[in-house]
Length: 153
Image (tube, rainbow, N blue to C red):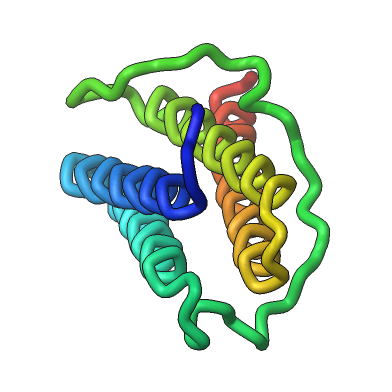
């Protein structure tokens, strides 16, 4: 990823959030289980919220002032998984694996943006987005572990 300006970086991040939201929306429409469907719909809403935050970056309302930062431990489950492409009819565990890798990539992107940003407001937003993606990743890894445990793994 070579970007010429902060604007290009933000545009790229916005497109990534849009793509993530569309992915979760598409998966939720195809998911037969109500609980899984609701989880995927919630993930799509959160990605749309990230998109809005990035679109408002540089405006006063773009930096949430009441956000609570806290450490999110990394289970590193996705670190041991291979890249996959979405295919309609994928098994639930494959959707979780794919989603974990997507969140892992998003977390890496925002960590990189955080490290390269000099503006304190941008740093705050990128730090917040790092935490949000880390929460998503942990949530998905926990779902995966719980599901696999129920399967006897």
